[in-house]
Structure formats: structure tokens, C-alpha cells
Image 1 (cartoon, rainbow, N blue to C red):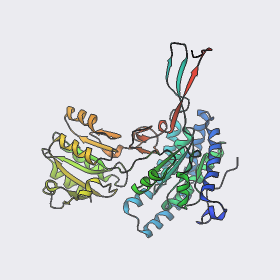
Image 2: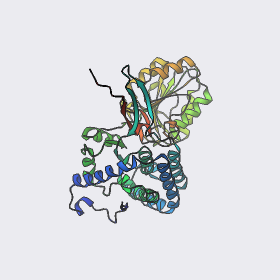
Image 3: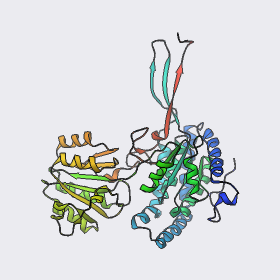
Image 4: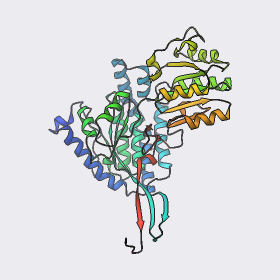
Length: 435
């Protein structure tokens, strides 16, 4: 199978250049992807492992080209006035690129989910039933800003026996193409069809609409980006969607929390990286917690703008007033809403009212309060005495993630290999017929 070029010489719309409608272009890519997926589904564990290790080596070998492409994107983003949070998501450096390659290798080292037997049973009539993991098929990924998604999503899809059609954001166009070129080269060296990992060759927004309506060709869509992107995907898709909206993550500092632990966790949860979906966006301070003034002072001194209720404002004159909208805002920036609450019940009520069901955490020395928090907070990830910045597939030992799902169906939390599979029933009989 020929390796298609991952790089387009000009920004012009390929669909128009080829005389194809967006629907026809997506259909062609999806058809090629589905054909490649049938081959990928039959690859052995060793073959997929070797292919991903080859990709990791190619990413390292292409470091200079990838970083040069990324520098072009960052410069363009600065000229367009992208926020600091978006530029942080976009920017690559040697350390981040090395981590990207390492993540691909880690995915390669994970157990192959395809063919795993979920459970077995035998019916009274002797029929033997098994549920076995299989790939979902062709997965479409629509994402913004973060070029690492190109490598993470492609690696996870390939390892789980799927093919993928990637549509990255315009902000990262050069980075995505350089990373995809390395991926295609690594796959080719391992004998894997390049069409298993395709990058949309045009930034025409009409192609996103064509992806969303490609029922029967694309098996699942995963959006990763801002609220407007995800909302559009969920509203317009005729293809099943695996998504989350906001990452409105809370950290509640209980009355009995260790002061030093609380200060360290809160500062890390917000300020380690403000632009990721696991960053704390609301801090809840128990009215009985004795070190609130020092804790909010740490955040302000670190450059964080605090917006609080009346009791929070009384802790430090530098805290501004929070509006009703602040409690429902994912800032993705060095801005934090702060409320003082009357105990665990009040904290649980606030979280139930405002959480986006992504990640919520408690810092406490009370085991009973910890267990209540774990049981009663209805979020995909619930934490005790840990920074919400750990809400990440790599940190969960999953190698990487394709996103964090906050819904209730199919997959929840960091979606990695298992979340990219479905299952089929295998039934073995000895000639049974149904009376």
C-alpha cells in the first residue's frame, strides 16, 4: 500500500482543488481507513509493538523538523493573540517531544486489549459463552491546539486495533503535519499501511461537518478542545460521540486537612499547568480550616487571580468578587474561584451544583469524610489528598489518553486502550437447537 504524503504544499482547500465535495473527500479517506483497519485488526501483539516502537524512534529522529514546525505555529499563535494557556498547550520543546515519544513507547508496552476475554459462562444446555474485546473500527479525532494529541491518539488507536482519521486545529497545523509525517514513516518501516493513521489534508471547516455525518464510515468521534467545539460536535454528529465538555474541577480543603499538605496540593492543582482540563478551577475552603489565609496567599503570590464569595474576600484584600458565572467557568488560565463553605455537606452541595463531572478532590485527615466524598461525588475521577493535575491517562498507568470522558456510557474517565474497544459474544456449541 502506498504511503500518502502527510504534508500539503499550500493551505488551499484540497476538496476544491480535487473537485471533490467535503463529503466525497471524507468518504474517500474513511473508506481507505476502514480497509487499513481490517489489516490492523489482524496484526499480532508483536507486530503492533514493533510498529509503535519504530514510530517513537522516528519522532526522536525528526526532533529538529518537528520543533521547527512547532515554532512556526507558536509564532503565528502569538501574532494572532492566542492566550497564554493556549500557547502553553501548543508549544513543544525537546523535553515535551521526548515525553511524546516515550508515551508512544509506553503504549507499545501495554497489554494488547484485542482478544482479551472479559468473561466466560456456560448455559445449562451446554452452550459456552465468551465476551471478547475487539476494536471499534475507524475513529475520528477532532482536536484543537495540542499537537501531542496527534501522537497520543494515533498510538492508542493503532495499539487497540483501530484506524484513525485526525483533524487537528489550525493553530497546530505545521506541528501536526510534522508529527504525522514521523508517524507515517515509522509505520511504513514496520510494514503497517499508512492509511491506518490519516491526517485530514485540509483545514476547511466543512470537512468537520462531513466527518460528523459520516455514519456507517466513521464508527466513533472523539472531540478534544474547547466547549464550543465539543458542543458543536455533540449537536451535529450522526456518529456516536465520546466526549466531555468543561473541566470544572474542584478541590475542597476539609476542616481537618493537614495545612502543609493542603497548601502544596492546592498550589499544584491550579498552578502547575493552568491550561489543562485537570487544573483546579474552584477552591472550596472549610470555614473551620485554620490556614486559609496562608493558602490563598500562596496562590496569589504565585500569580493567580482569585475571585471569591464574601467570606473568601475577607481572607485577603487582593481577592476580587466572584460573579455567578465564575462558579461555572473553566478558566484554563491563572484565575481561580474561591468559596468558604460550612462543612462537608455544603462542599458536596456546591460540587453537585457546579461540577462538570470531570475531576473533584478533597484534602482531609478524616477517613470518614474521605469515604463520603468518594461515594457521593458523581464525577469521572474523584480524588483524596492528591492534586487534580493527576487526572491524566499517563499518570493512571494507561500510557496516554485519547480524552477524559464525563458521560455514563461506554467509557468514563481517561479513555485509553480499553475505552477504544468494544466486544462481541462468542458462542460455542455441540449441536444445540432451540426448542
